[in-house]
Length: 72
Image (cartoon, rainbow, N blue to C red; front, side):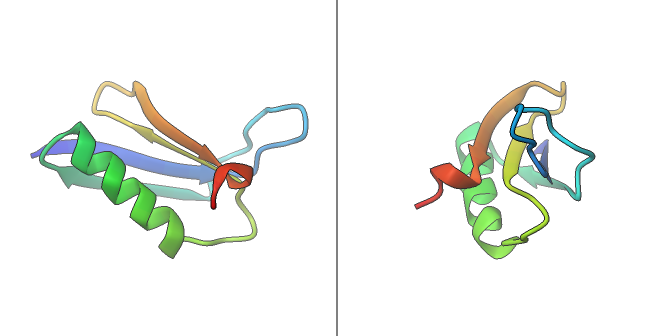
C-alpha cells in the first residue's frame, strides 16, 4: 500500500490557497485507486470553509486537484 494525502483549503480569488482546513492521510493500492478515494472523500467532506482539494503522493507531488467550481 502507498501513502497519499488529501488536503482542502479556501482558495482566494487571486488563486492563493489558505491553510488547509482538511488534512487526511490514507493508504491506497495505487495512484488510480487513491484518486478514486479522493473523489469520493470530496463528496463526504463537503465543507463550506473550503473550495479547493488536492491530493499528493508520498513525495509530496500533486497528483490530482479539484476546485469547487469543477464539481458536478
